Image 1: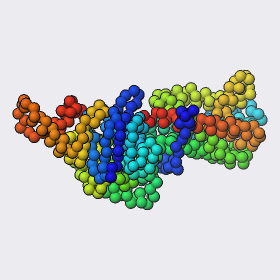
Image 2: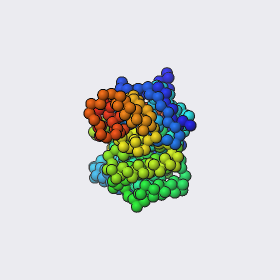
Image 3: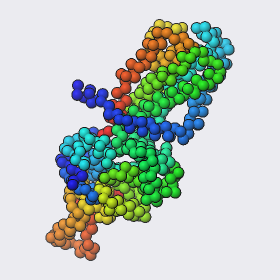
Image 4: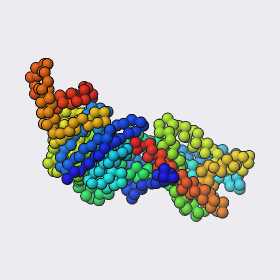
Length: 258
Length: 262
């Protein structure tokens, strides 16, 4: 079953075109990646999926429902991890989860049960009574992901989930995400880290300037790239096998920006 | 026509109570500090002006100055609390804390969020008017059981000031602009709405202008009810406030949607 279907999806605001009539489908239980440099349109795209930003033209359905008319029903089934942490600094760690659960209309007792499970799973149990500001960057990120899971979403949207984290914190997040995937949660991931994309994504698209350049499995994208360059006259001998990063740089024609 | 309809449409669900509940949870964390600050300022006015200056002032409309002033301070401190909440408070949640963005990623809609802000503003007006009422009750300044209906009046007055403040926040969303809101809007209202002196002594033009002050109507209501001078005039003051709420209600929703949703 296809969870997300986008047809000729266009996003413009203030005369700027952020997403240029893209087409893609995301299947159930896969991890689908949007890879691209900053300003590629990844965030604009996922914001349309969770209904924060209205579609300019084209069609976008999530769980078979139109985002323009059924957004409340769609949001009930989603978990969203936005690019900037927007944990509630006026509330303590556990309260953040409980109050967020209330926005889904989740019963208080059930919310507490789930919140405690999630804090345990994300290694934040000891921090339950702390204020959010006292957490490290990695902990805040984990809490944001935990918060996104409070309604047991069928689809989890992660907008650059590990940007700004140190390698250890990043691996810890990846490990949790892999576990969620095994549990059957569909994941949408935007990132500009090649390693992240190749580690987690079943399929991905590479975007730049609002367009989708290529689509496929990480393996296929690398294989196509290797086949293509070996067809050309090899100017400098490459000792290393090609990586997703090579594909990315060739397509977007620019260096990664952090 | 279609555009107007879209402007007026509000997508509000029962989840607005969950948004309001979030604000109450935050409020309950530091309510003591919150209340004591809001309680301190009117008390200063009451002592300095009501008792200090009042010693030299003749009774106004047959009422001792302290009794005249106290109901005005009930109304003004209530709406100031709301104005602070729905400018600085709303802006901080929206801009710095990104609380609104977090809420609308759940089934909560942007209109639910704004309705929650207005409810919180109403809550502040009712609460702070009650705090001052308790004080002036202790001082023996309450003369009529009509006072019991003041929370109903504050519901409408608080809603109006919440709406006005969020309109300002939506139009000039930056933290410096709120200084202008308080110096250009709230302070003139505070000084010229009959809190400190009756406007009957001023020129006819001033009296006409004052009619457009929402605080003027709210002060009339609180004073009439506390002093037990209830007549048809008060009914019109109430209608004025209620009509202003109904007419202006869609505006903050429209402005905030325009600001937040792109």
